[in-house]
Image (cartoon, rainbow, N blue to C red; front, top):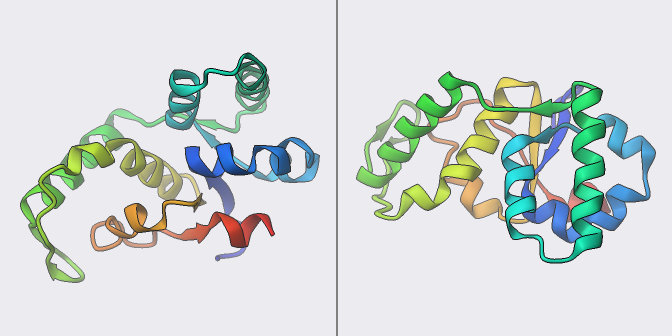
Amino acid sequence: MAKNKFPLPDTNAIIQYRQNISSSNTLIGKMRLSMVVFYELTATTVDQSHLKLYEKWHKSFNKDGLLLTPTMLDWYETAKLIRRLRFGEKSASRGKTPKIPNAQKLQNDALIARTARANNCFVVTTDIDDFLLFLPFMKKLEIVFAEDFFS
């Protein structure tokens, strides 16, 4: 993990480690959060208390300029990445990649990864295998196991 980079947790990392995040002002001050993650949290949360927590975080991170939203270019580059994965196209660093016919299911993770890379962040995730698929196409993407990060 490079120095001076900020952690950007994936949705599953937040769900699994939200207690660690909530109880650490130091950690919250260092983190960045993706609007894609807030979308997923809001769309899938059924517990009202967790929804209120996420709304509080959203307001705070937005006010402090720590809420990252994918740009038009991020969306376009992510679409090209997903297409490359679907058809098993050649990557600059690793040659031809295996075809992943349902790669569009990785869209949100790809947007999170792209946003992290573009904003001096590393991804903190429990779904390491999904993010590893992006490495042949996203040079300098850094991924950290949530368990290691939060321990």
